[in-house]
Length: 358
Image 1 (cartoon, helix red, strand yellow):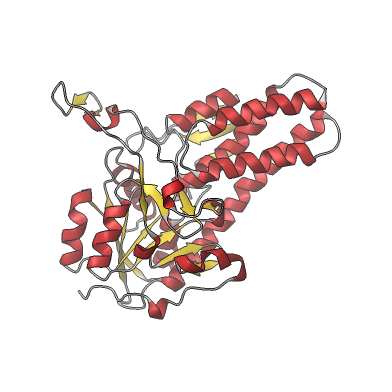
Image 2 (image 1 turned 180 degrees about the vertical axis):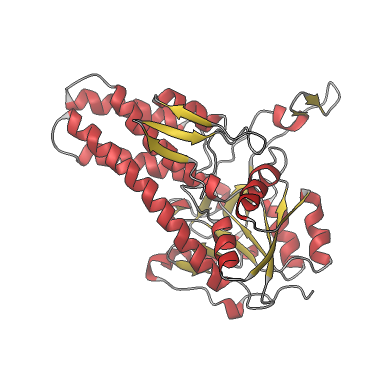
């Protein structure tokens, strides 16, 4: 198992995902400022993993505050929260985890030291809960997948695996559960330009566990579907609106369009903490725009001529009507039933689009 965020020796250990797959390195984080930088530079990435990291970052910030006055402590903790909120605007798990940590701080009675201790326990709980959530998503996803063929070929985009969560993964959690139950033949992984998380991270995770994986460039997906090579698409999410519109890594929207064109079911796997019930639809989801160097440079190699301009949105929004089901820890739901997720109005896999015959 891969655990990208762990509490160890009174500090946070992060797998440095910017160095994978060629180098496995663990970074020790001792300060909230360092955690903010690690999130911004994508040493840790993936919405659930960012949420776990931010929770520990809140505790690290709380530990740095030198005062015994409760009100002064809470005021300074708000500044730590604002620092961490500013790192990645699209991933709602970040804001959810910070909000839970702040609520814990305000509701905990006693001394500053007691609040700090409770914050650490809350961060540990968020970590453990996310791992359990991902395992539940994997199991529910297994039930939502097409019944035929017996062994499926699943296409995924970006990395929504153990590295993007506390462990096990969301989209790759579904893949792992299918693999364990003998329902998976192979994973096709989009390379995921411009940061290549599919080629670097998803492929790396699959190789570690012996799961057959084929990497394709992002613009090959439609061809593979037309050739009958794909039975289902499963992706993760960074934020889901109340109506089911879903923000995920750039390129997901086009993948959903070609999947629908080829009558291939398109699933989003994400914890309920990724659903932002405060926004009605995807037009209200903020889209992070990242440095153009991600486009024009790979390593030391410059790919483009001088004088060109760049546009580098990190995410796009897939409309709910292109999504077959959203797989959560409570079950799989049609996007229109997402508001009833707590009531478990479950998705019926027998009413889903049939996959393209192979």
